[in-house]
Image 1: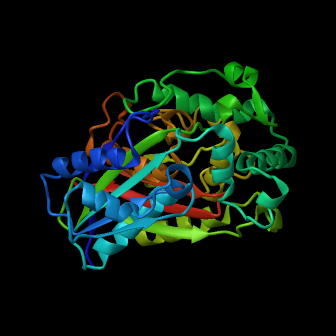
Image 2 (image 1 turned 90 degrees about the horizontal axis):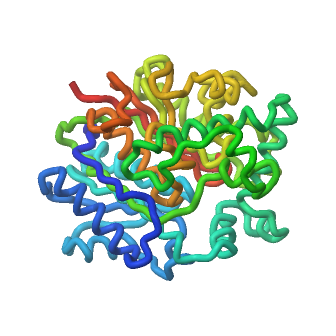
Length: 378
């Protein structure tokens, strides 16, 4: 079995690319990643994406990217796992190199959401849940998370203001993040005053949609960063049918296996890129990984435990909330950001002395969870 290294990474600023196509975004970021890897010969291409067929009337993204890059004959495919598509694509790339069958694998996460209006985007995101059970009654993805957040707050007696520290952390880190969509700090008061989208979720506590693409080159040859473990796990698709909706079982399973295979202790992790689509998702993820006690993650955030320069920095480039959430690309952005941290190229967002990092990407409401543990090669 081969070890798996990241040779290079590239991330486009999350934005609204009205004059660029899906293929343009993929080709741009892929070319930059390949150039940064000294133009290595790519043996396989994997594209992570959630909604290109619905949003952009384009499928067959693996072949599309291979064609755009002039890589006739190269194996190429698309991977889909809702908002976890980017992380799942990196997982498949990891397995490809780990198996010894491939030496250099290009992984790209891409999504172009701004071509759609809000009602269409809402329908696309709802496809992460059951068509028969959930979509049929008009429940949206944000409404499911709103119900979960209300249940969390009521069950653990947590005030809404305490939950709002997660978007505050994200936006503070995004101010100096060159690829963040919203590089502006916010306060708890700002979040509380923002418009209610689906009670108790507000505009400033909800990750925004955007266009974006990120890429990494995975290699069997030693590079600056090594992926120690990569794990995917699933939970029941229909949230309303779960016995314990406040347990993120997919995250628990994936995290436990990833830590066992990496051979490190959670206390050794220097930073985490957590899937903070909504405050309740960040809270339940941190609790599922044992970072916080049940019902205590918001208080830990308020106490500064997850700030830059603290015990465990999270969302170091702004997370989904402020970097932006081009859904199928998000997991690839997290890996690219972890690469920058561990390679020491994170600039003003650098976590000092970072040697070990973890990324957590989710599809649906913890329906699919993808965990990667990465280390700096010294």
